[in-house]
Structure formats: structure tokens, C-alpha cells
Image 1 (cartoon, one colour):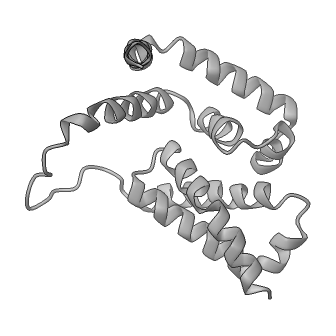
Image 2 (image 1 turned 60 degrees about the vertical axis):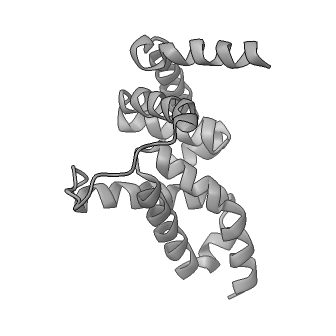
Image 3 (image 1 turned 60 degrees about the horizontal axis):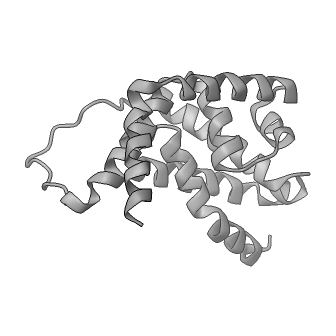
Length: 173
């Protein structure tokens, strides 16, 4: 096994895998765990991953399966803490608002639609790659993405203030 090749691949894809986990609905810590689990599984089968026609599609398929498996095993509800969290930095509130709006909008999508949005928009996989990852036809990827984007575009409750925030940002520059 070429460990250096795997290490280079993992380093290059780490942020993208973590971001995909976050947009699949994980917290940052959970997304990092998901990315790590994905890479551990890929490391164990690196010779098979290397032979794959499309390594990225293979790795994202593993990521989605790890995500599905983790949701079956764990309870993701509220966790009590000894102390409440510190107050947020007021300057970070815009970024938090945007992140919250995106998460609320994506939470309104089905798992299938959210997975297509993450693969096509966030991971920038082609329709063919996304279809391979999901085990569906490219036509199914196209229709799911179309429906998901239409749903997101019509989700005024979650995304309405983003337009205002973005126009405010544009006017201050």
C-alpha cells in the first residue's frame, strides 16, 4: 500500500469531507468524526479505492454510508451540560445567521434531496459521479436536484433574511 499517496489524498479532501458532513446535518465535531471514519474505511480498502474509476465518487459513497450508519446507531438529541455555553461574539452573528438559515433550509429537504444537493453543489461532483455515489440514474439525480433547488428557492421562511443580509453586505463595500 502506498501510504504517502493516501495521506496526500486524505489531506486534499479533508475539508471537503467535513463540509459535506456539516451540510448533511452534522455538527462540526460530528462531521469531523464522519470524515475520519470515512477515511479510515477508505484506508483499509485503499487498493480498491485506487482502482475505482472515480475515487471521489467512491469516497463520497463511503461518506454517505457512514453517515447513514451513524444515524442508525446514535441518538442525536439534546445533551445536558454542566455549564451553559459562552455568549457568541456579536461580530460573528452574520455568519451564524447565514449558517443557521442554510441548515434550516437543508433540514426541510428529504435525505435523498439533501444528499444530491451536497454532492452536486457542495462537493461539486458531476451528475454521473453523484448518480454513481447514490446508486441511481443521472436522470434521478437531475430530477432530485431540480426539486430540491425549487424547494430551497421557495423556502422563504428559512432563507428570506439572507437576501437582505447579502444586499446589506453589498451596500457597505
